Picture 1 (cartoon, rainbow, N blue to C red):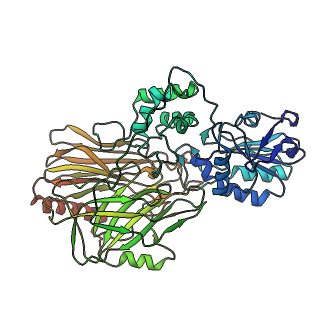
Picture 2 (tube, one colour):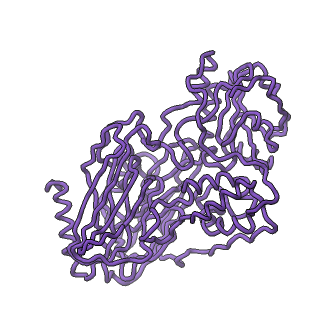
Picture 3 (cartoon, rainbow, N blue to C red):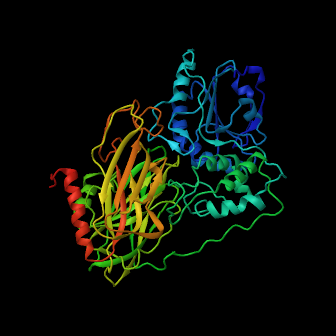
Amino acid sequence: MLLAAPNWHWQLRDTEGRLRSQAEMSGRFTLLLFLNTDCPLSNQSAPALADLHAAYGDRAVFFAVYSDPLLSESEAAAHTRAYLIPFPSLLDPAQSLTRQAGARVTPEAILLDASGTVRYRGRIDNRSESLGRKRPQATRHDLRLALDAVLANRAVKIPETRAAGCAIPEPPKQRGPVTFARDIAPILHRHCAPCHRPGQSGPFPLLTYRDAASRASTIAQAARSRIMPPWLPEPGPPHFLDERRLAHHEIETLSRWAAAGAPPGDTEPVPPSFPAGPPLGKPDFIAAMPRPYSIAAGSADEYRCFVIPTNLADDRWVRAIDFRPGNPAVVHHALIFSDAGSAARRHDAEQDGEGYRCFGVPGFIPSASFGGWSPGMQPRAYPEGVTFRLHRGANVVVQIHYHSTGKPETDQSSVAFHFTDQPPTRRLMDVALGSRRIDIPPGEADYRVRDYFTLPVDVTVIGIIPHAHFLARRMHGQAILPGGRKITLIDIREWDFNWQHNYRYRDPFLLPAGTELEMEFSYDNSAANPRNPSSPPQRVAWGPGSTDEMAGLHLQVIPGRNEDAAELGQALWGKLMREFGGRIR
């Protein structure tokens, strides 16, 4: 759609109170950038927009446009300061400019030439394919290419792209068949508020009508695509603790509310209350990062390991841990290990700054693996009779996945340990299925990896941990009982490395000796995979790097008898030797 110059007519105040109008566009190249204060994709674009302004601001007029009808001038002004927006920011609560431009989401760019004709509209780059689906790095910078073309008086090769982001809210309607008070608040308070409240990992709260109304369309879109709440396994059985899944009728209710204009209802529901204080009580020991770690405004996702000395004089038995993100806005997930040797300290000393880079694996064989954390996961004690040794003088190693918010951040996370005097009476063991024989040709959209293992003893299955990188799409694990009956262990049809999780079964179950465990993972190394880290696709082999792949399905089991642990361990060792062909040093 082309918009001629005479159609542009607007007069808006910016965040400094200055009145601006279409006259500033006359005869000049103009870039309109539609933003929102709390859309993650919009905020993450801020560093790229600042870079574009530095490169092109002397040849084109830049305007940020805030279109949220409920946004105050002070909130918009605070946002421009926090995210270092270096060009004027317009307030468009009546959405006059937004409608003229035809903008629908944030972030979205509209580039005009000196005559006022739209020469490009769409995304800034291709890092985000849609809500919840993003590449590790952008591989095409559409807006920069369009600016280069327009400023050189050339045709833009791709004049329109689909912008991925949060829907620009329409002014809410006061009445409708579905209301926040009666229908929506119970859904949001139950499923969303545990993370979407102050001090937690959600990028914005979802407690009150004002919180939800301007985000109604985005909430409905995220629910329909099952991006939110983030939960990868298909509906059970089996069922897991902390399941975060909306029912079909709840998704339909959210969609109907958004379509009706987000009416409030008669009364404002009381937001839920959440327990104060440590969920497991006072800890016995806290391992905290010695110093804050800085996350740059425009950085790619980081995977960083931090080495925390314990200085414990004696071995201690750990019955539970509670990871505490120092800055929930940037901490995406964490894994906690201990190292009784010196490998982690060596890695730390070899790299500048706090901690060391550690994508995928921590870079050493842990003395103990205490578990992990991801948003929405509640801390729990290990199963009865299960404890892990924290060696005296050992270092706690915390692997943290950071993602940028679009502005400079710091984090200083910690791990609370709960001890017991009782050594383990039951042994929690890891039964690992997986393969290192990964060799994915470029363009292959359905590469499959399989593995098998027969249990030599009875076990109780406590949990399951799948692991792969960016190319994995589907993960399936099953158990075939001696009589032939099949039990699904986990079924993930759309893997997302950014939402990996340690899954614990709601109802642990027995698998008898002779049960065959099977896994099958599929990978998509085609250009159509929006999470593919390579453009064009490259051949991918097994490895710990972000452009490598892995295949691991780890069952957490407890042998039926303590004396069976040795037999199970011997069988697992034999499996490992066969995998490596006896080549282990």
